[in-house]
Amino acid sequence: MPGIVPTRWLKAIAFALCAGALAPAALAADPAGRVAKPSISVDRATQCIDTPAVMRRTHMDLLKHQRDRTVRAGVRGEKVHLNACIECHAGPGAGAAAGSAVGSPQAFCEGCHRYAAVKLDCFECHQPKPGSARPAAAARAFIAGTAASQPGAAPGATQ
Amino acid sequence: MSEHQRIDSPPATQAREAVRAGTSRRALLGAGAAGLAGVLLAPGIRLIEIAAAQGARAAGEPASSKVRWGMLIDTTRCASDCNQCVTACNTENGLSGGTSPTDSQWIRKVEIRHRDTGRTSSAPVMCQHCANPPCVDVCPTGASFKRADGIVLVDRHTCIGCRYCVMACPYKARSFVHEPLTAQKPDVPRGKGCVEGCTMCVQRVDRGLQPACADACPEQAILFGNLNDPDSAISRRIREIATTRIREDLRLDTGVRYHGI
Picture 1 (cartoon, helix red, strand yellow):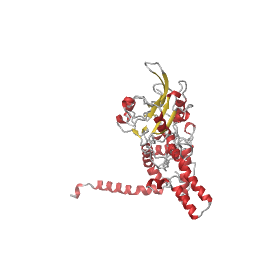
Picture 2 (cartoon, one colour; picture 1 turned 120 degrees about the vertical axis):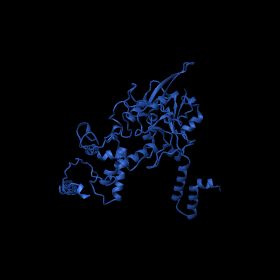
Picture 3 (cartoon, helix red, strand yellow; picture 1 turned 90 degrees about the vertical axis):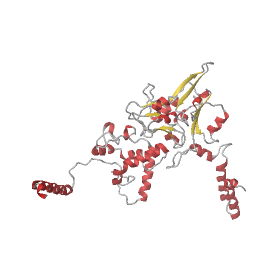
Picture 4 (tube, chains in turn brown, orange; picture 1 turned 30 degrees about the horizontal axis):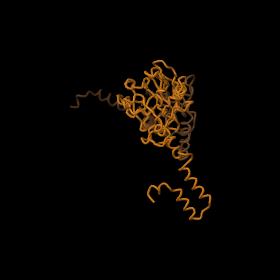
């Protein structure tokens, strides 16, 4: 019995559907987007262990699996290494947050995690500032090897 | 020629082949040197043995149960007024060095006195790295664990800070972190709400170094090495001198042994 649904409801549903279809187009039309992006800067212009898109999506999984292998099985010298992350990504910030991966909205880890509203608890135990020369040297050696094997890797793609 | 001999003598074979092929004397000398490297440096010490004692693993290689790390502490050489092992531990692992009940202490100097004879001795006591660790038995989350090479560790990612292991350890070797920390060493993550203890300087051992306490002892009273290797310095020493374990009656098969207590 089609007469049961009032015409004004049908109109409302049709309007909602149209609005839903148009909204992404409206966003795409605005190049800056309607949502502010986190402001993140990286000092080093070296290639990270993977592309920014992959790192954004999977860094937590990479670190989680690596940490279990390292702590439980004692595997050292892995490609993924939190100290190596910090060595490149500990960034700007003032006072206590200077040269740290956390502590200010400009810091690499904290900036993005604040933006995404994801709790970041690595640094309740781990040191957020680079300090040990050894893992960094290993990371740089690894990155150099990766860059050599991937000549097309874009510089400055560490974000 | 038996299989064993054939495996053992590749340099000799190389040398014979070099002679047969009429190659230069240099090649022959090189083969001879390669043979020597595997044989003798000084009486009883071989290059291969030194490499094994170092314990540094290749990147990506997990800890192996072929190794069991242990320590032999010679209390006859341990002075009661010396605290250098404790200081070295604090420096290496980023501990505050405080001794209040809420401060972490991974190693402490203990003065012991025999009840009957009155003989006193001083000894550093830390996690004894038991083969049957009670802390691992009681841990409700599996955070307390024994690595394949015998080092007993806390996985802080899994530790909920219940402190059952602190209660279970007969050596009082575990500490709890009560306050937020900021000055951790990059290689030694530590944080509030977790239990911790001596890691036998796992970050150094994996690099082929010995623990900081053994390195710092001015009397070389702490001997670190592989208990599973019958030719290691520690195994030889344990065969030679009388050693004991603290609370041996508990049959925990500790990795740390003492001489002279």
